[in-house]
Length: 528
Image (cartoon, helix red, strand yellow):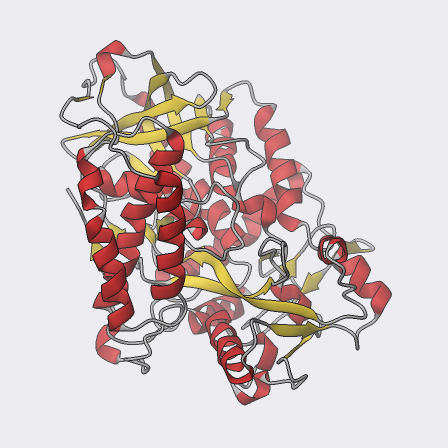
């Protein structure tokens, strides 16, 4: 359903604003990029879809992985990342992540991010597939919120950074494979505006809201990937969606994340018959890679005809668990579950996208001057299955690398750049976009979830094909724009999943359950 734009417009008729860096997204990746760019002497405009507080960063519980412990090393961190990535990690990208990551974390600490300590020593915990205790955490299970607080405070204090909230970026402005900026809509006034930049950075986060069950916030509708694809950028590894094994399953409760760190502290998984089952599936038991734990849970749910399994913390020190996981304790308590006495009902939910806009090792996409970092990007650092708590580190490392790569662009003159227009889109059709959003989530959950088959994927593709006519129509409402983006990216995920006739990491085909060496390669998709 490819078309370059979502709305008819003429940039000559719209207000225009310029900055040296135009950053789209206000989570850890966008904020750190803005901070690094401003510290390098650049003027930055940062656009957020809602507020800076609304992102996956704010929901990150477990922590941030970095080889800062006494017995740890980047080499060990790299080895664990490669194991989790199931043969599809770029070793060069992983080497960059684990070696540059510790310095970026130290910069966070210098900014005032307060990680948990015992005396003067940082506290580390362990999560799935890690061979060492290397996960730093803050306020027990509020790591993302603390990082966001520190970054937001620092960035907002910089006079060279302008943060504009409630700005929905509709499309990128690209000519002759060069990105000059973006068309955005102010969600308060309804006004369209053109934002130009010498370097444009996509840091728009993930795509969890394509699924009916997800740990992601409402804003995670894959907008950045969709608009980059429409503009002609390459996307890669779209089939690899990570389903977090343990999201809360209670009537009327959101699919709240129960951090992997809970299992790192000794919690056990039990089926509805009360039996512990993970040792039957993997030698690392509860701390096996996320894809393995998720499939094991689904298998046990099917075997016991139940809609969840259970996390058991009842054998652990109650006071310690409440102190270590205050957010989880409070949230479960709201729904009548005492984590120190009751089993917590959990099941897998869409959590993280390993694929995204393809970039090189400096964050540059296949379009000149367009860069991407964080969950919206893909340079194969996570391979087919992200190692727990590497995501926050990823945003920091590539945010910094993008600034290092682009400083030379600041010397160029912004005047005389091309104008952009679109006049060929038809009026918005009579379509129930609210119902269509729910249908997308249902189709993705049932047909393109943790367990896939050719038949299910073909049914999903037929659904997306039936919606292709929408590409010829404009949509002026941001909720409808989100649906268009969800259709675009849902089709890309499904298409890549159909192409990969094997099982690997976050992609599992019931009809091709084995991993095939001939598929040790990446699927790259490109539109216009």
